[in-house]
Length: 336
Image 1: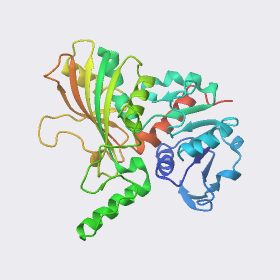
Image 2: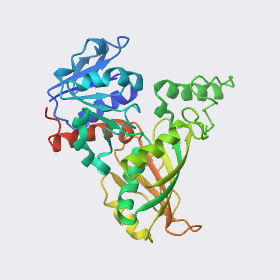
Image 3: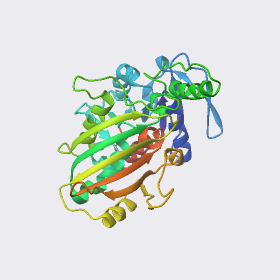
Image 4: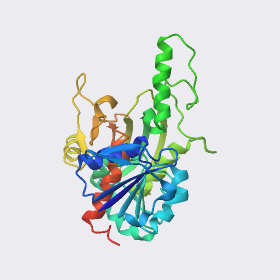
């Protein structure tokens, strides 16, 4: 089938290209699309150079599925237009709260893809929500999750390429005893952490924290109580999550580990010794959601702690989008 990637020159767009190639996705023709600034660039796919096409000049009726990886502004302007001609899988936050548009993590709620024909648009979830629900869904099925307390430790790639460059340049300036300038973050990011992602809301939470709550409820269960703190850390790739999970029922650690070990997308790396856990560096370029530090919360009954790590550009974005497309094909929902 013919496939388009809007935002093909960005971090997530390039990862989608990489995932499509690694998975040998069934593509007849691949169209790489970006703004007029990037049109004309050359990007390799399966040994062949593809020329980036100007979004303003592309005809979406040529493709079966269009991946959007260009942010909310582009999604707002172009996704509905594209969806008149094709199925859109959008990676931005723009459509996630729309009740008529499915918010999909295939291992968790692929049955919701049945609603794709509502608007021909599917929303890809937040990059820290995806690994969280992949890890929590098997436990929710087992014990029924009552409440989750979350702290996310999010890499700079979640903010884009320029913030990644800022971390690198600040690190270099630090060692050269230069003054550190912050353009993309509210504080110095090199050798620091920032307890603030996205803008503040009236309730004191940030939009990123509110998104975490809203999206987990939409994907998993609206009855789950959630509170979160989202933190930016000086790591290039991979998000980490500390989750305190309270169940309605008595839980068993061995059963939890066994269920997670056999659940799609999950990999348990949990040894109670030095290095017996996963870190962001080790999760980079891996498809799995890694779960470590599984232990009971001694301060509260029916409650456990988890450490979850995942590559935010892969499972948190590009990989999940491609897996959505694979689910559409498997269910024959991509056909017009």
